[in-house]
Length: 412
Image (cartoon, rainbow, N blue to C red; front, side, top):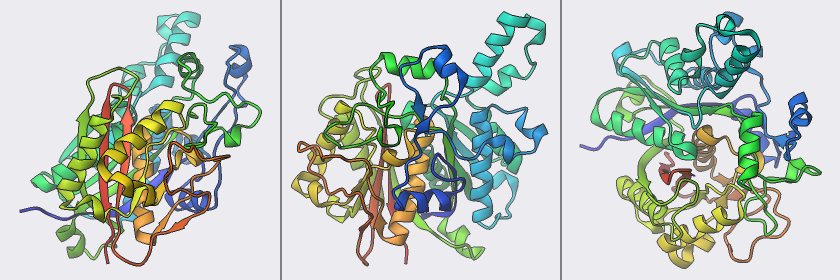
């Protein structure tokens, strides 16, 4: 018997807000989280890109010092978002064996690894922190969240590049359907704005180079888009069975109606040209939701602001929805937040949950002129979705050919 899986709590720390609600309100207001970087290493290494979308809240300002110093920033962000989401869900009381964690990161403890390397070179092996390996492990954020909440049903880590945290949501949905848990904290985090990543992404011509106007550098679907903007932060959603949520009188934001995960098996950085894997993921999500393509009322697109990526996703969507795709309200929220890599899917799922709940599609900012080859219904202002039932999909696609899509339905 298929169960209804619902969202009862949300949390986020992002480049445009310190909480989920702040991030949502800033998104609707058309805010941009991209700013010029003020770190000395930008000029020290003569980096070609001088900007990124750093999180507004610094973890050390929120977490107790003994906790923060034992965690990589990616795990610090994870804990902040998860704590907000769990509190927002009413801090459900349940046996620890029925509470799970499904967390994602695209890169993991990059800062811990590279800081330790600097220490080793400059000061020798005895000065390398004993917790270096536990801090750099990609499962460290998941472990930090599970230990904080004493979640013992399971604690999974997903590392599927930019599809990671959407895949975590799909995993959480499936675990709840299977009865392995009653409540799951699912999400993703990333803290990888570092000279190495900026240099690498720049070398592959993936980043925008608009140093003179960073706030508008991320411009999905604009004809003059020239690459993505690196972001950082985390987002979390508390998922539970509807039966469990109703039994404890929880507020329900929306339903996670289904999900799809596929692989291109094509190229380490480029999407499959015809978007076959992405299309299959969308179809899987809708099939699991028991919905047809005609029921979709909103799309949160992956849309990273790269010249090839945005048009490839459009092709995949058009292969599914046909001409109707151009009339479905679409949001590309990375224009505001930048690209949080492994954390981006969870953040955009939070936005999509709030979109179907409030029946409004967030704006897509920074479009100087919409690419005529991508004639979607997008706007620099919020788009009303109407009073009827809402069904949205949120897409995430990552290096390595990872595709993940989650279907989110409104509740009355």
